[in-house]
Length: 365
Ligand SMILES: [Zn+2]
Image: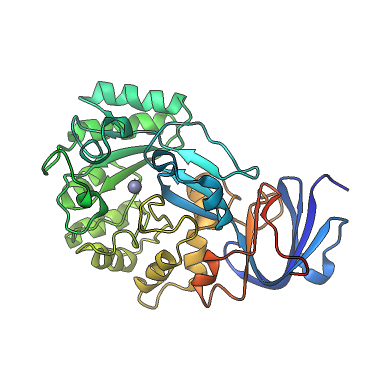
């Protein structure tokens, strides 16, 4: 018998894409070795039967746990097994072994005095003057283990946005990087095998990002965007992370999200975890809003996929985020059917990270 081996049976298994009734997930050491109908599950490992649903551990694509010093084990115990830290201290990838898996962007590249300097101070930013210093900054981040490059394209002033609520030291508009600087960041990041995510809230940032070929919008923009920019983003295949919950008091986030989804963009899951209004774990309200903005076209399974299988693919770490043989043994279990009721996901009865139980179900559960 391997050192750590588990046979976890459940009423249903959500594998990252679809529901498999009465299945089992078999793990050995840090990997999943089989996902099979429950009656076929063999092996000598510890057997756990879940009256409910087993799912992949959730992946939050927009977090700031390092900058915020959010207790990472609390996040893990509440169902999020991987976070992508999109602005904060630069660290190499870590965790996934009973600890929260953390992939980091490091400090946000920005214009001198640009966002996030007015909100979080200079430590959260790499202020770049020109294309040459921008390229050098990207290379330093890549050498330090960055999993992506984040750039700030934020003039400030959006009503209801979390970054407008701080008692800022500088009155908007905050400076934006020049177009040639954004292009240089994208070119250098791609040359280093990294994607670029932009913090942007409105048309000025979106236009800069689209012109430069930025891969991802780290938020659904919160000021109403012109139709032309929505169409351009969809045509360019820009990836868009929701953060709908934390932006829910802004004027434009829902109209933008509805139109992006109508134009064919499939939102990815991210919450801005570390913001005071979102939970330290899975955010059921974020999932509910992701389905809501689909206006009947987005299923519950598609929403869960955006936080699991599609998120793992987006990170370039597939099959992370799926329950298939060969995937990392990052999984959670909840009572009942979370496809009917997302709220259940905030209260996992089992959490496993890299084959290690972090939340152990009660005996007999
Ligand atoms: Zn953020």
